[in-house]
Image 1 (tube, rainbow, N blue to C red):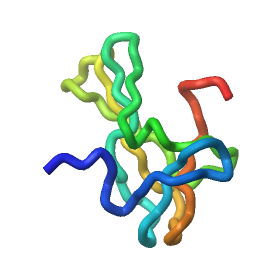
Image 2: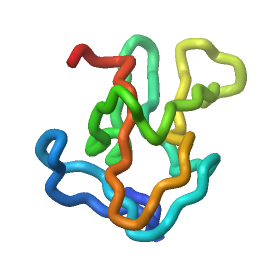
Image 3: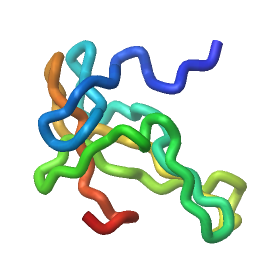
Image 4: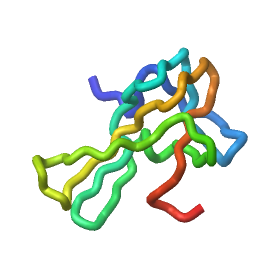
Length: 101
């Protein structure tokens, strides 16, 4: 059955801005949390995972670029991968690179 978020994450009020993603359990460094953004042609689309993540100058996640359709450069996707161990209750953060803050 489809779930817009991994079962290790939830959405709730953020101290950074609006709603954010939070860990429902401890998450190890190097965990792939799933697809956060997809590029089709020149359009970048946020998935539910990408839509609720907040910016931080010292983030605990990064985007990893993957080709969504072989080596077609116009079709890419980015997965959200943890770069630090994340504790239960921590907000999931990312350094924004697609949007001005």
